[in-house]
Length: 502
Image 1 (spheres, helix red, strand yellow):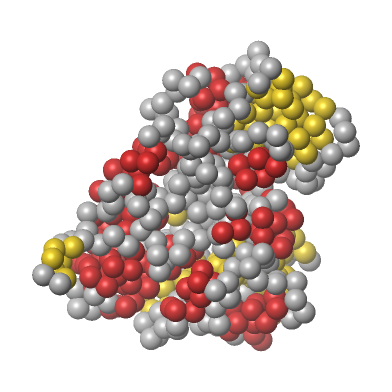
Image 2 (image 1 turned 90 degrees about the horizontal axis):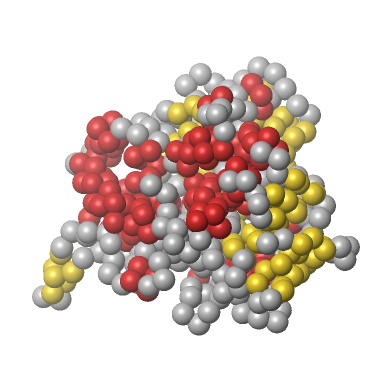
């Protein structure tokens, strides 16, 4: 039985802790804040409750597998999963409105044909077929396996099988996401549908590789799910599973240094000067983890570098407490697309919040989130520059941007302004405080291709030291964080020969 110290109680870290405890190891988690879950948080006031992190779950199989591998009770015995239908309503800049069924290609094609006309549904359906090929080519190396030693091959050929087209007497294929929109979808609304899906994951839709097509494909193929009571309930379930497997948690315990002995990780030192010995250490984001090892490099010269976290954007979340019941027929999620798509790109180009942002509007029909049937809990989310690029603490900055988000949301929530009781605004500064991520940035998922996104491997250059969570392979998002925990546990239990889940 090995002693294992885990830094942080995020979803990836807890997934690793539960699996390692079941394997017979003694696991202790050190969390600098007073609660678990990382970015999966909840804000409560006056009987209202709001998810301030992810609002929906994709690929629930990742957490089903976690519960199967760590105990007899399946995930559905701990939380109630509800498949959201429609998956989302989309309100485009020109006023077009379409609701897309959940996990139904035929239904999506029919809905788009009816709303957009001109064979739009067929073109989107054909795109999803090509996106599936991208998923099939990248699923194992980018989600289910430790990062390959020859990871450079993932930065080689673009895995998306773009439709050939002629340009300057040469045959070309889409290498970037915007080229798919321009050359294959032939409708600015379909292009917005594609680009804004990437934007929601914190991926620049202006420069994203064509392989980002896997992001809408995942949501289409595996559905989007709501956790009754809020996604925070999933974090609670994972935390309780850890406790049942005798994982020890220390909250308010900030790790400041990784201890080293004999050339390998030997434990952690806390801010109060106390030390905890360990045979293995599971760390948090590699960029921050490197600061706990000032005397040596965390990764070798040939590894994926641990880049600054704040090179990626963050999110503004606005929690709205509304009087009045949710109207009949309201959908769970509405995407209000920006009138000016170029504005959304300014946050990547210049670090400027968009004047007219694309806004996700979540309106869960869940009595657990409201004080009574005559009230409604609504969450607005927009992708924005990290706090190191934009001063979210400047007087009026957050409130002014929240006003613009609410103005967009009025297209999805009837009478929003008149119904508002109060609001809570959360910026990247709150994300940084809760997760420690520089500037409150949110990690994107890994994407293959020459212009893709890869995160550092879970195994580091120091023996016995591993990294889990969204800033490590395979990147951000609830399913990816859960898989990072599975990969770390496999590497510790089975050693370097571990090749991933089967």
